[in-house]
Length: 61
Ligand SMILES: [Zn+2]
Ligand SMILES: [Zn+2]
Image (cartoon, rainbow, N blue to C red; front, side):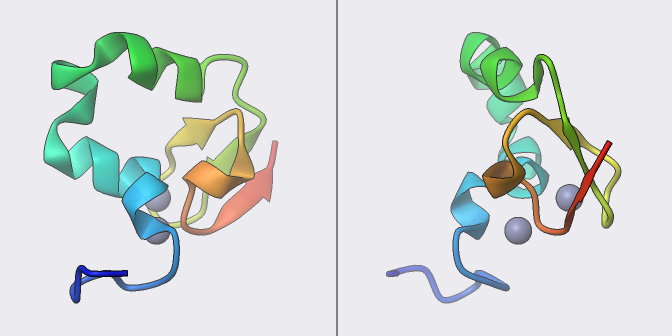
């Protein structure tokens, strides 16, 4: 991975990170796809995603 400021692997795909980038504003359609029918919640920020791979600390809902 090229970026040095990632706290852990795959963080560039995590909603926590994408949200900080304004992904939900620049790409609302794609963002909705990630969160709709959410089955996992992030323990860190409370965001919900359909795929646990899009969260830092996923817990099953
Ligand atoms: Zn999070
Ligand atoms: Zn993360």
